[in-house]
Image 1: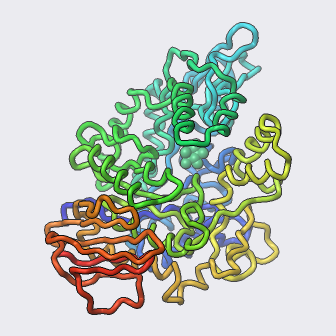
Image 2: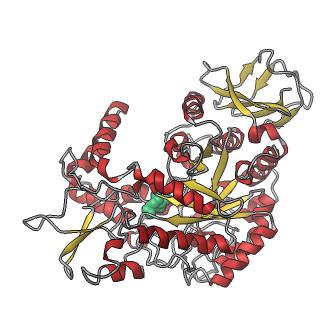
Image 3: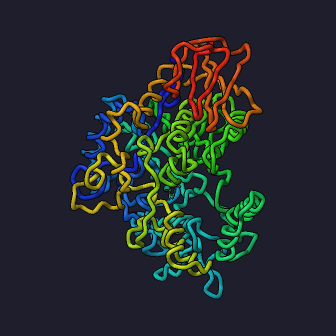
Amino acid sequence: MDSLKWWQKAVFYQIYPRSFADANGDGIGDIPGIISRLDYLQDLGIDAIWLSPHFPSPLCDCGYDVADYRGVAPEYGTLKDFELFLNEAHKRNIRLVLDLVLNHTSDQHPWFIESRASQDNPRRDWYIWRKGQAGGLPPNNWYASFGGPAWEYDAATDEYYYHFFFKGQPDLNWRNPQVKQAMFDEARFWLDMGVDGFRLDAIGTIFEDPHLPNHVPAISQKEYYQASRAAKTPEEWQEFARTSEAMFAGQHDLPEVHDLMHEFRQVIDEYPERVLIGETEEIAFYGKNNDELQLNFNFPLMHTRLITPAGVRANQKERLTALPASAWPCNTLGNHDSPRLYNRYGDGVHNQAIARLNLALLLTLKGTPFLYNGEEIGMRDFLIDDPALFRDAISPMVYHMETEWMDLDAPSALRFAAENGRDKCRTPMAWANAANGGFCPAGVTPWLPVNPYYAQGINVAGQISDPDSLLSFYKKMLHIRKANPALIWGDYKPLFEEVSDFLAFLRIAPEQKCLVVLNMSEKPQFIQPGPEVKPGKMIFSSDTNREKEYEPGRIQLAPFEIFIMQAG
Ligand code: GLC
């Protein structure tokens, strides 16, 4: 195991800085707040932090629109605070990985302000500017992935600029070598300071077809949106996915991106022990000889309504087979863009047990696990019911499309907009059963509403001393993963592949073999493993009634039981 890199052994924890901890009581999370919770994180047992963007930003996309890549947003603190954070994290053996947005900057970034100033500005070509077509039409028919056209007209210079996301996020022109050098230098600034790597945002969208071909299914945004809403069956979804693919074909995953990632990897490799993590599920980003990004998310695992034994087995089979030799897997079930896993995968009755199974799954599958802040206390989505409180610009857009294009009544459209925006999973962390969940002082209005569930035990203080809480379970499982090398680097071998109620697999390392059984059903199960499972000591069972002594050859599983045993 000593040959493994730190990021192969680590469990990552994503911090969404605006919502994590507010030290100065202004209703917005900040870096001193994070520092004050480092002991908590150390005690929880995580090894690395992925910090969502902490840079100055006008917040058109909640921080994913960066106005200065070397700064710290004033509401989060200063560069000095950041350095202290980095040092304090390192003192506790916690690594720190930043979120680097490469595809675009904010339209308030000085580079863009210069670029838009005139057609002959030296930075004009740092972004993607084109003339419109006759008749006041944009350069082509491409759409932005967040809705609306991908081109924004700029009257001052009578040209359009391209943006894959919101119009406040103009795409950088990565075909310009100056852009590449400038961005590599921004990365070096943090690497020189000692950060441990980057999670690279939306890398698939960095290049687009320079010939700007119109997309083929020339349907309007309205028709496209209606098609997305009309798809109900898996077949209809597939059909919609095909349309979607054709619509955005010229706008993402162009082959050039791999040369760029390879070059960026060389920058990183000038520094010891740094890591690049791609926000992509594309295996090609590992590179030809592992020479691009060290980790890329297994998003297909989480892109499912329900986590089922058959679904996980199929995912693992496909993913692990497709990974190039020595590429390291990377699993996650939640982040700041997706629903909270507690309610997303819950069945409404056994959510607590299912949340535990899902954590056990993440920590026992092969690959580096990524957790999202708040999962450890079972935070749920919170649906905002006042449009004035939306902070994610996706919600107002969805509201508009629902009322204008789908003829939905206002209350239903509001609910749908809240469900389909991302504020719901970004609400402040609940630290205590106190005003504002202990996130900020009473009387202060937090930047996003606090989920009132904090009063029902969904808060850190309430769970930390309760041995049966979800938080205590997280701690226990994180500890178990660390203490059992097979769970970190053992090969994955599925067992009982025809069974639909439970998932059973072996993790086989030179020094240890573990059997993991996750009963994903509400019924007891009975399993009789074959000779490859040697009777060994029990490592963990979530069934408190299980006898310490048991017969390893014949395992009776309680409903939703998590069972881990040494198997040779
Ligand atoms: C990534 C981020 C998301 C952001 C988008 C544009 O997908 O995770 O939050 O909106 O990129 O930067």
